[in-house]
Length: 337
Ligand code: SF4
Ligand code: SF4
Image (cartoon, rainbow, N blue to C red; front, side, top):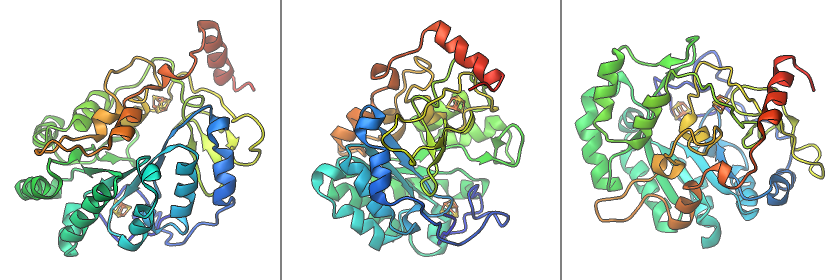
C-alpha cells in the first residue's frame, strides 16, 4: 500500500517516483481469515507483529479491523506510522484497555515534513493521546543530512513533548549493492552527529550495520515476513518462499530456516536480532531499542508490552541440533525440499 500524505526526501519506501502507486491493495483474505491463519494455537504462542505499509500504514483500508483481530488473538502489535491520520488512530485508541496493552505505535518523527506542513503540534498531540489511552508509543527519527541544522530544536521539542529524546535509526540506501548509509557524510562524522541522541537503537544498529551475519539464523522458523494482502511469506528479507501462509489455516504453519544469511547485512537486525533469531548474538532486547524513561519516571512502553519485548525467541522455542542445522544448510544450498 503506497499511499502517503507525506513526501519525505529520504523515503526508501513507495514515495520514490519509480515505485509510487497511490492505490489501495486488493486484500485476498478477510481480517477473520488472517486471524485464524495466525492464531496463537497455530503459531505456538503469542507473537510480536510489526505492521508496515509501503506508504502511511494508517491509510490502508480496514487496517484497524485487521489489527484488532490479531490483538484479540493475544499477539503484540507494533504499528509503524507517521502518526498524523487522527481519525484512524482514534479508532485504535477506542479499543478495550486489555487490547491496548498489546499495542505499540512506532511513531516516525518526520520533523521537516511536519514543520513544513505545520503539523508538529498535531503529531505531539497524537503521540500523547496514545500514552493517555494506555497503549505504547515510541518516537523515532530517520536521520538525514538536511535535518542536521535543526538538531537543537528537535531535541527541545522532544524533551518538551515526549519527555525524552527520540530514538535514532540509520537511513539506508537500497539502491546500493551493500545497502549503505543514506548520507553524504563520512561514516565517523555521521555516527558522531547522530550519536548525541544517546539512542540505544542507534548504538545497536551501528554495531551491526555493514556486518554480515555468519551464525545460524532461525528466520523462517521463528520469524516470517508476510504480505498481508496475499499471504505470501518469506523468512525475513532473504531465504526461500514459505508460500501463502493464510491459505490452509488448519495445517501447520509453513517453516524453513534461512540458516546462513545471504544479504550484505541484517539492516533491521534491531528487531530480528534483538528478538533472538540468531540465539545469544546480543543481550540487548527489543524493549531496550524501543523504550525511553521520561524525566518524570514514566516510560514509553507500558509494563505488559515491555515485559514481552524483553524476551528473546530461544527462551520460548526449541533450538535445532547441529545435525538438523547442517541438514537445512545443505537443503538450502542445493535448493532441495
Ligand atoms: S511518511 Fe513514511 S512512507 Fe510517507 S513519505 Fe515519509 S518515509 Fe515515506
Ligand atoms: S541475519 Fe537478519 S536478514 Fe539475515 S537471515 Fe537472519 S533475520 Fe534475515
